Amino acid sequence: FVKTEVVMEYMKGRDTSAYEEPIIWQKYPAMLAGLPAQEATGKIWDKAALEERFGVIEV
Image (cartoon, rainbow, N blue to C red; front, side):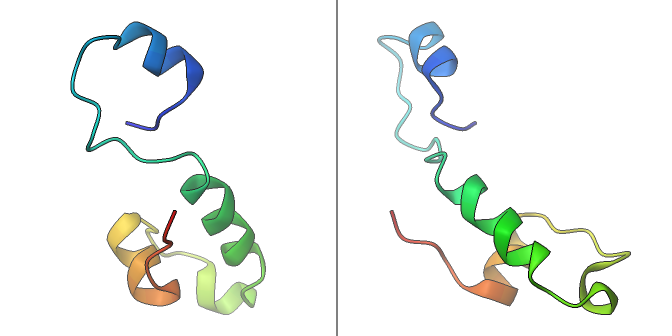
């Protein structure tokens, strides 16, 4: 899950330490958009693939 206002309100009092910060999912799309089409098209860009290609985003 991503730590959005809605999610955090719903999950009050529960452990959300493993949830991701929204900034991660704001930066990776911009990085993908900057790739040449032949490098990005037809691939599955899950978190592991994004981290392998662009590195881990520290928040």
